[in-house]
Image (cartoon, rainbow, N blue to C red; front, side, top):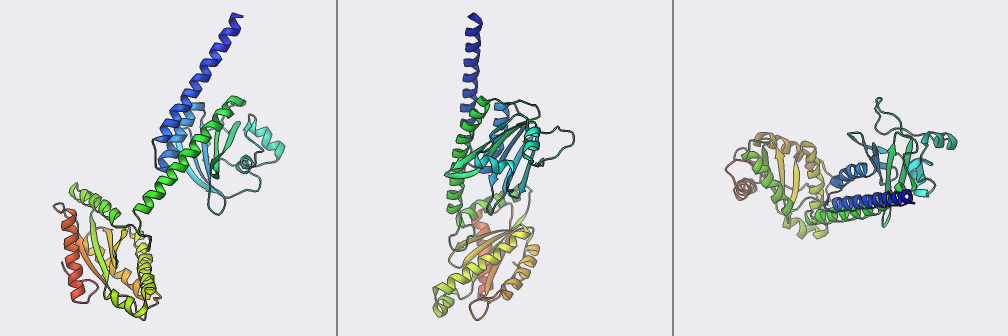
Length: 341
């Protein structure tokens, strides 16, 4: 009788410890608002909760397939894998598999082939496997834990994994909502470029880098010559097309490491890495793309551009003022860029 009581007491203590772990994991996830941080924290917490060497989070990718984040040992890897008509992840979504404590035998019996997402020859293969769906309004992915040992998991483990999946789904939904709100708060709705608020943040960071001897940036401020005449002649719809066209072309500068913004109206800004001379060459090449673009207007829009290299003594206002001065001089002389500043 005493042994039975001790067994039940020990089992109750273990249950309490597991639920305490679940509360701690949930609290840790709730503190994070970026999806990437959330996913990496989730892997660490799940591994502690289940004492398992492998955790996998597979999220449904647009157009099919999966974005997979795997933690095996101390190695984190990311892969995109194509959809399979009858893969393990697809079976989780269909509800035909949740827990399998002898995965090799299951795969042989079902005639399924699997591939290790992060292959290391010094690590053994998965022998026990659990997977549960993630729901955030709709099915969004699969959470899996895996072990190198046969019979590693119990039905109780599966129950806890399902509970964790509920909390993770909520956390992912909240993170996605936060990112969407943040994106909308920092994005120009017409062009999709970052707006003035994000420009101020990035500009301050670039000036801080200049002050600490880090990466140098050059600021380009630009506007469209006689933009009002475009609206008056062709209408505001065409004017909006011109602005969105400039925005599309500006995104090409991202390949040069630039950050691009619409400040408002017909005014744009670009933060280009490097000094003024390098920025000028980059923009002269970019202006060739502007001329070659198929514009609705009779001729390509004329862009006036002012350049100012970051200086450790500058405030944000100083930096903008210098670039503005250069831009207005180019505008006065009806040039794209002036030679010197």
